[in-house]
Image 1 (cartoon, rainbow, N blue to C red):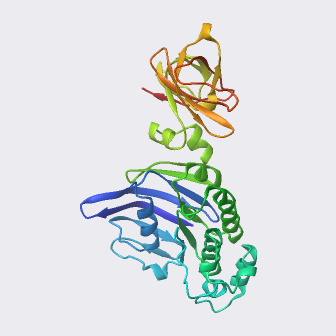
Image 2 (image 1 turned 120 degrees about the vertical axis):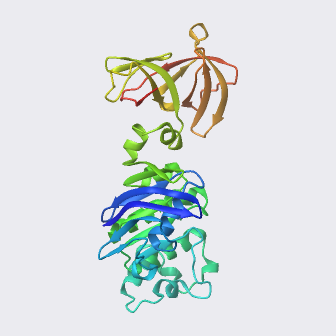
Image 3 (image 1 turned 45 degrees about the horizontal axis):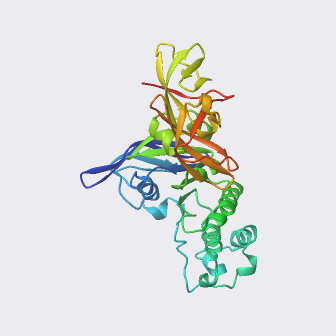
Amino acid sequence: MLEVNGLSVDYGSNRVVRNLDLKLNESEILMLVGPTGCGKTTVLQALAGLIPVTEGKIAQGGWISTPEKSVPPEKRNVGMVFQDFALFPHLTVEQNVQFRLKDNTLADHWLELLGLSDFRQAKPSRLSGGQKQRVALARTLAHEPSYVLLDEPLSNLDAALKDTLRWDIRDALKKAGVPAIWVTHDQDEALSVGDRVGILNKGVLEQLDTPEQCFEKPASKFVARFLGEASFLQGRIAGSNVETAIGSAPVYTADNSQELVELLVRPDDVIVSHSPEHANATVLRSRFEGGSRLLFAALDSGETVSARVSHELKVMPDQRVHLTLQSSHPLSALSQ
């Protein structure tokens, strides 16, 4: 188990990570997300022992690292997977994976498992980006790390390859039974791959929970917006429902002491129909997404909301439409 308590990191007088607490169980994958400059990579560097920490402690197995007594990187048995692969260009795939290994049994195991057997004698220059990342992962896992840190491992790959490789990496980590922290800026990647998701904002961990909880019950507006399209409608508590300008919906454990709330509405919670006589919104813009369209509309109440519709429904800017809030599951309401 990797355990982090009260971790803070300063760059000069600037505190970039503040009071970070987390526990990583065996074989658990934690996705760490947040905007550029929020401290994601700094957290990885601190956990790897590459930069000093200002406060707190990091513990794993038989060692504890603190500001007063730091454990060096080579004593932490940590595996690193980088976005630029970090392979030795003059070595073959096999030599890269076997580097500094006394027993090549595990190297052979991961070469086979990650589909690299046919590329053993190839140099990195002959490999695709996806193959290079598989080699980097095989090398990491062959050394039996206590935990693995992945710094945006898919950011240099094309979209089609990302979708396949993310699952290959996840499966390999699970088969190795090793805990991992995976930094990404891709919200879809974070929600689909991680056992838990941590959302960083200006060095502060705003929420750490399962992907479902973070998406459906965000701790703040920042979390809600970072993990997908999010609209907030003014609402009034009415029993177990919230009434809004476009209808009512059930809510999670409504705080009846707060009569007025802001209801988190995702695009799939809104129904759009062509009904000029009942129109209650004006389309501002429409974004084609292949199988669907994402509409942004201004309600007659003065609020704005996004809605996802079939790509067959062609709605143009300035068109009047009727929007209805429709959700079979509870939505999240935040106090005003």
